[in-house]
Image (cartoon, rainbow, N blue to C red):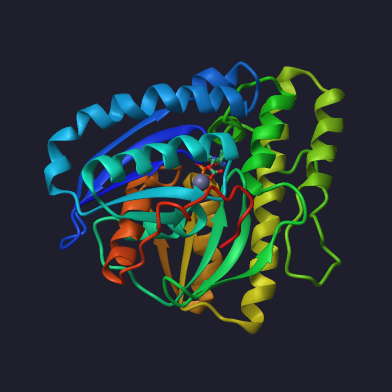
Length: 325
Ligand code: KG4
Ligand code: ZN
């Protein structure tokens, strides 16, 4: 079994995964959403202190598995430096105390492995990663070969939902709040401009849309918020679809997946399904509870790394907040 730890942002999570069967034997997550909601976004120092309290509490619940462990896995990149360090310190302490090797896991790759929790991994695939920190199109050949083919020039898809919710003072995280508000709104009322419409680059951008929404919020009343939310979500999603369509014209997808916190958005899922129809491509999605940050996806990836003997040394496993795939 492998014990895995995730603390790259505002979720403290630990999982135990059985190596041979990929079965998830234990999974617990404590989210800090309520604490950060007061500030309209994640406050790193507060997040770090909350991890320091939550991780040991979760660890106590799975101590019965300790004698069966073969490795300790931990998210060490990318993320917030002061929160990643909480997980890495715990992993090193556990590794030393129990005499077990460490496996350092990349959080972005971990999100891709959310597709394979309690399943065999399946490659190749084209992945759209939409989270709070990232919006990336990734060609995945294997555990080692993951190539980012498009990324955002500014804000990420999920982050733009957070910022729009903050403008309306609706709390954090903004994704689920804006998605549910949009259900009763008119998506065509505000007619926001599609980002990078006349730019042939396959890339994403949300800062222009965010500013257009800010102007709309400033000249409206709360009764207009459902229409603003629906118009924003409509264009934010249409922008992804527009760029994916362009990419697919040269690289038709066979197996496509959406991962990351914002892949829980049902409107986005429905639009991607429509987009894929002409290609008869398979669509892989993680179960809703594993879209946002969790240790189960980190543990699942660690199983594949374990099987390839990819361990980290105690002195070279560092926190790399800005690293990529
Ligand atoms: O993957 P995740 O848990 O953390 C990061 O690695 O960033 O993603 C969190 C992000 C937040 O920005 C949140 O607002 C967004 O995912 N999100 C959503 C939805 N649920 C979560 N965005 C749009 N629609 C949703 N339903
Ligand atoms: Zn994440």
